[in-house]
Image 1 (cartoon, rainbow, N blue to C red):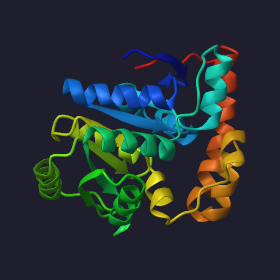
Image 2 (cartoon, helix red, strand yellow):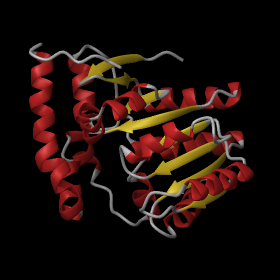
Image 3 (cartoon, rainbow, N blue to C red):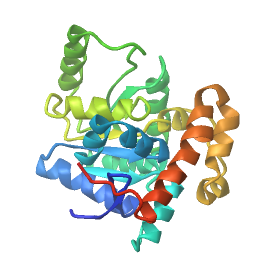
Image 4 (cartoon, rainbow, N blue to C red):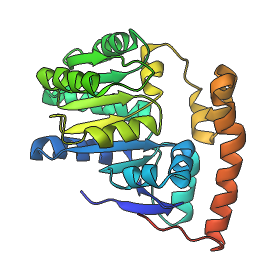
Length: 254
């Protein structure tokens, strides 16, 4: 499927909705076409702005979704009819489809035990959902031997979909590096969705999510981890976007 894309600071962000994303995932599995999805917030775009490597990884993804409301607003400003493709909601709707179609899911990421709790919670919502396995990697860089072991472990489980919860851009780099090494047709980087759906972290109220104020809620929850992202990177994002909109700066998609 082809979706409209908006160039946001050199990152190609798809402008569409959750049903469109779920349909694309189903088609990739049916067609045996391997791909990965980057769920992009402002911090993801800023990571791509600062690093050509990250930007290339994002632009080679099968889809880059507008996870943050600022990206949705920009898409609409550019003339696209788009909705928020929020990682936690994408996970639920994809799992709904997977349960109906019999596709199996693997959960890679989260703290120790989070993957198992997440899988259990999702099976409560979708009793027919197939779980191929879970794995919580250490926070350090895996050795080549450890990486090969986890590749073999995941491939032995034969999942159709791998959910990756490592935070962005770490999860985007991981998916790009493992495309073709893993047998699953689809990898989806959903970050905080692991903590939200496992119940480890509370989600912001719906009105805050839709009004672009979710960052305030999350900042109060995890100030030490998120202060730089929201208090430094978000204002910088606005400055760079103003430069792009005024054509003072031009950004190429690489």
